[in-house]
Image (cartoon, rainbow, N blue to C red; front, side, top):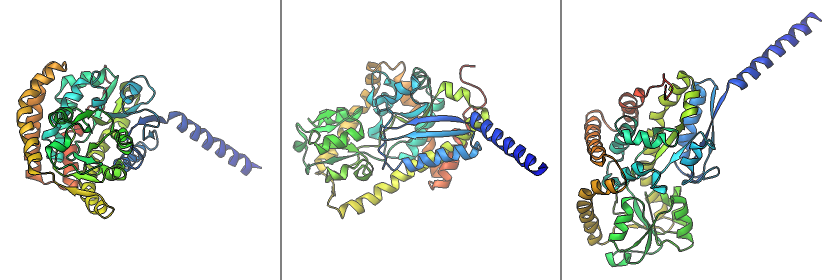
Length: 374
């Protein structure tokens, strides 16, 4: 009888402890528009798992991808309003509400070094861009991390080779890419990457704009069998993981640190996945009928001339967009890019080294001790 009573008491104690743990568990609801098969999702899953492990289960993440909770356009407002606690923000889809993020995207044409620009972008937005901080604060959100994409290319339904082939064609064009499309006498269409797939499939778009990996990650290979490999620079701006400020403030310092300590691995995994995937996709999709090719030399020359003429106008464009000090942001982005070129040249560009540098130079410097606004 005594043994049964002891066993019952232990059972009640365990149940009480389990109940207390469940009550103390905090959940972050994360919203992304990335399609379920996107190559970044496994990296995010590992990131969320690492957070849970490092907090001994006190913090969990419930992830909703493919726009199942919020669309790309709706994520910033949805996080602000508490529909989600965190999300993948892309300012180009709501340019009037996120002009600073959209301004950063204007520099995409010059992103030929994704490792350099990933680091520069994160350091800029986290620590060296007051206007960026103010913009996220309007959504009651703290920016935490992103990555700069590998170079964009055109994925087309037909084989376009000459400049005249682009005239009148509807192509995906966001930020500076919209102006490039207009210069090509094409018609830019501001749609999300996943919306672009549907538009390609239905013949509404002739060409979608994204990295080579989008043949698989965005399913473009099902509708666009012609990929022009002339690089157009990788997308800047946007942010992969942002957290609602009330949720950040609700976390303990240790829970916040569990997030920031795992950001370097997430960012490194995401950008290296893209670099490796671009290489694999050309080999894999060539076998299934996609043609990867360079357009006529006049196309590459036209793009280079456009970039030369366009860069001096970016500051004026920033002013038109309502940016308070576009020159300061431009100068700081250039300075940080130069800093990271030097760091990577000195230390190396392997994954382990890159992750270490991101930790040392950027993410370890995020203040995890103090709630925001206090």
